[in-house]
Image (cartoon, rainbow, N blue to C red; front, side, top):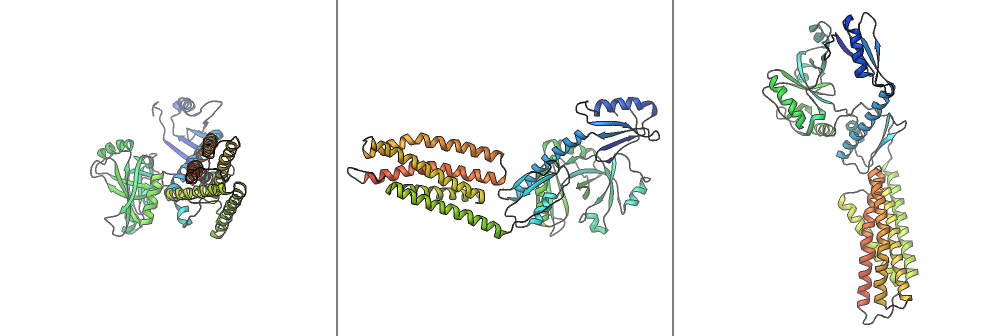
Length: 464
């Protein structure tokens, strides 16, 4: 159009081809040049291959290059992963795993521990949720045949034929109806700012979804509705018309999707609209369910190993450091108590990787106490008084303990930023445990020693 080249129709026979027909013979070469300049890309990275149609069609066909197809598949997969992650986060699933899988272009692995209603979650994740608001050009019609007969059997290039969704107003009045709508959408799901479910005042017992538009969407929607007052507007979801209403006045930034939605259906639809539409439809290739008994057995085994490790460490500390070992055990127990309290406060679930983080925290706590106790022993061997030796031991060990904990916390932060669900759970548990250990091994343990020594008029020894 910009180059004043005439044509009859533009159609898309499949996902990788676009056909342009009815170009005047005298403009064919000019049309080829324009297509080559705008769509062919470069020799290194071709976008579309421009080919000629048979003479009677007088036009061209654009075929998407394999490199562009691969690029679009990768982008669709990345965007799908991000959309699925947003929907899973909205469901409140603990430590999900959402990542590329298999051949890296087609498959996505989704692992959701602790889901009570897998069928509902599958429906939410699979929903494309492509919201569009389109101008109604003609209708309603009782059948597709009737609608096409009205247009002579061929729809205009900039129009499309859509049917009402089950539960729409027309369906309630006597069957699903058909409408001819504009192919161009006024606004889409990308223009949504928020969406929420609420009771439908026109249908007692039913629910609707109210949505508001972003600033850019409202900037287009307001002037459009002002220009088309008196004409019908359709709310389309996944290529099915949910509702049709006449534009009474200018509408700036709000709308609603009506139907016979239940509360659960309306809430789920609002959720997927807020998370954005999927760039492509998805289907489930394989589904596996790990029963609660297997998961419980794994957790039980992990907890048993952590408890056994704690007991073994306690026996060693008592045997090697005598009464000072009690100090270490108290500090270690307080460390675990603070860790579990923090996990409960943030609502984290203690999974198998989290138990591994607890076990590593126990090891780091023991290491900190060993460093302090060995420093105190060295100071006492040098002939220092008991109180002075204890204080010097803690002071000299502090830098080493702080260094090891900070470097480990930094490593855990990288695990959290770049890891998947279970790895993130391990990183969170480890970080909380290390922060708690810094407090208990340095300040709590020192406070216990100072309290015990202050009760002696002239401390003569330390059981270490």
